[in-house]
Length: 302
Length: 267
Image (cartoon, rainbow over the protein chains, first blue to last red):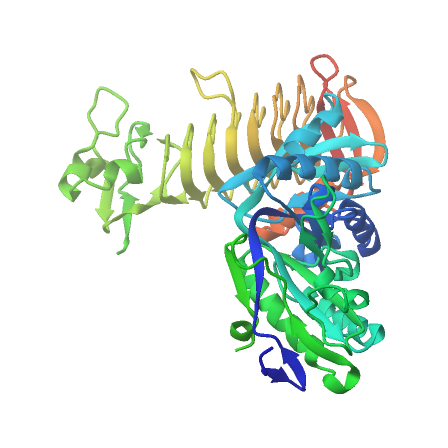
């Protein structure tokens, strides 16, 4: 392991391996920020990993009334999948089941883009013929009658094929509490970066995986090299005094946003210094052959 | 470059057809050729040079100075560029236009913005009958864009409109929004009788309650509309401060036809 250090925390000379994804952003507004957040959290629930959730999604940031199309408090949500068709299906299902249903909500495009995804253009059929289309300032909106009034939903939103998924940081430390506190700081710092989300619970994963398994049909299994309880039995990556490892996974609309998020994350983790129990910051990769995007930690903090 | 200016020399003794004077048509013409364009409408030949003093060069921005209500078809079929009219405009102002921008400091005659497709027209004064209505030979009225009338609008504003936005700053005449297929008309002040006659779809938004409502509109009561907030925000973004609020009484109609249109009377 290399000896690059920030405040005594070793930055391992390795890289995070990330993958191309397709992504979109939508804006949810509601009578209050609280209700916009409820709607956004519901929509981005069960969206930690494309492996079994179909999509990776999260709240990018909250929006003040002067930042939203209808002048109400709002939330920007990012949604990522591996291809456009899946993204369209996930968007329709999630907005249809979680935003349309949420009291007082409205939903707008959050991304311009050469390609468009249907938003209100497919949800309008819920209106059963009573829906109304309105073209305002060159943008089309659907007004769909619902029991608390109308669900206003923009017809389409943009998509980007330049999104990147799987930017990551692995944090090693001498106590679970120290690693968790460091990761919480990092997630908070990353939440300030535009265009990225951390899709896992609270932004943090404790069950990092490797590809494949000894069992047939199990496509991913525990990352044994980073399991502290297996140090003696496997080809471990962990020094003896490391008690816990947590991972932060980052999806972003561009590779630049991922790099910036990783940089903010690394500095937030190292902020407490080695004296608080964090020993190493490293990153997950598959040897560099699977994903085209390589984020070298050394270059990122340079 | 200074705008190409057409200053009316005196009161012409015939109505003028100014539809040849559009940026797209003039951009490649020499001053001599522009002055030779025929704008008369009678057997007595009248050219641009006869009726106007022509100054300036930039054909992408035209200015008409001292025009009156007999200067018809200003910006007719306009596709690009800007036209500023310092004075009144006659009939068919911007009729059938497909883009660009027209501004009139005075009033306009009948059928302003009739069957227009895109672009914007702003009339500081009044507009005659059938503003945003059906151009002769067309089946639909206004099909898109923005028509803003600062003063009063004559009867049948937005007749058979298909899409777009009309804003009437003053009073509107009878049969406002008649036979509309879709689109939006915002009335800031009084409206004559029979508003929304034959309305199929589309929105008529009234800031003041109209004095009489057709019996073929059904009341939905006073409700909250995020649509109104969205509209107000979009007005603000484009520099128009029009307060709409978020509550309105909704009437659906015209039930004698499709009945999917609405009147929103701000509460």
